[in-house]
Image 1 (cartoon, one colour):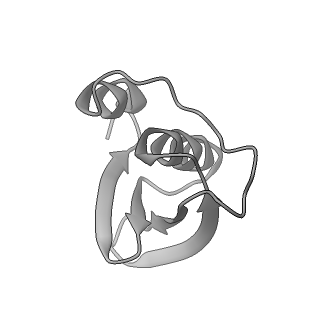
Image 2: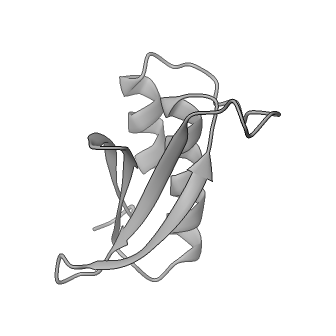
Length: 85
């Protein structure tokens, strides 16, 4: 599964969703069409990079898009690809 690689890459830390959204780092999850163009964006509040990747992965599983990217401001955190693609 694509999330297993992301979590392993980030040293196997358990994802944790922040309980206080005002103090949590802000992330964006971008869904990317098969053509490589951005399809949509979702704002995420997560405790850390691992949690943001997990949340974006969950959104990717629910979408029809093949790829998603997690960004924190101008920093690309991780690119997720749907399994089997």
